[in-house]
Image (cartoon, rainbow, N blue to C red; front, side):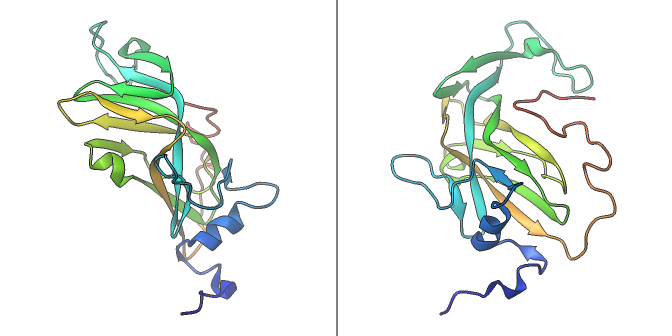
Length: 196
């Protein structure tokens, strides 16, 4: 079967590998740094896949701890809820949670919405990655929420794949983008804690 032509590149729907590559070229690429094909040898895979992009987790982690008896409050978040660590492998305690940032930064086009889903390699180990949608015209480094749902300590490997981003083009451009409403997480430079 012949590859699909790019004549319908602006049609709404899930973006293909070719469309993702096209949005990552030029002066303002959608993803930086960008890996044009999936890298798998000896690592948890990252880079372009058929209909998405597998993102990498960075080396800076904030791991939940109860050492200071802090209460997790999204309206008054205490940094004492976390222990910070910069390392190649993060050990998340049993039934615990960590935050991390992606190696990649993003510039989402005005007619695109992106959804993040966890990679099956981690999901099969009970490690769940959650990220809220990347809204139209949001840009910055993505903060990842990583949960260890198991009763055992769990490893997360820095600078390797952690989740997949799926990009969807809308049938029409939104009236108000994330940038227009000056969203509180716009232009975040790295791991960003909750803001009110």
